Length: 145
Image 1 (cartoon, rainbow, N blue to C red):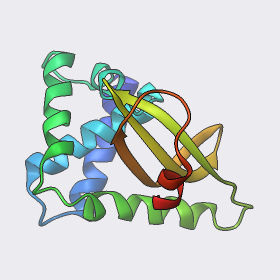
Image 2: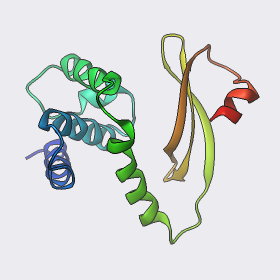
Image 3: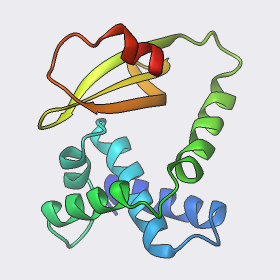
């Protein structure tokens, strides 16, 4: 069994236990996304999709994940907050560093996020995505976040 498959299987098993009443297609897609982030070390859908142990083409996996994140029936708080809480509980014994960062996330779109710095990564706690060009973000957007 490959490392990618091992990570995906472990994540899927954990999610099925944590979310027994959630639609299985959502649980599987979330497991794909989490394992893609863990093995690919990036949160870009194109990178994540290439890390998923699946017979489907990476492009198909990317479209599936894109539909998931844009699905209005998927409550991001329900899917995301349990993981944020778990991570913060694990880090609570240490000094936490909070940072704000901005990234280009697509054609003409930017995201600014606030998160906890962990192993040279920013684990997002809150974010705001908007149409805009790469570069400086207005103070009003920072305040809005």
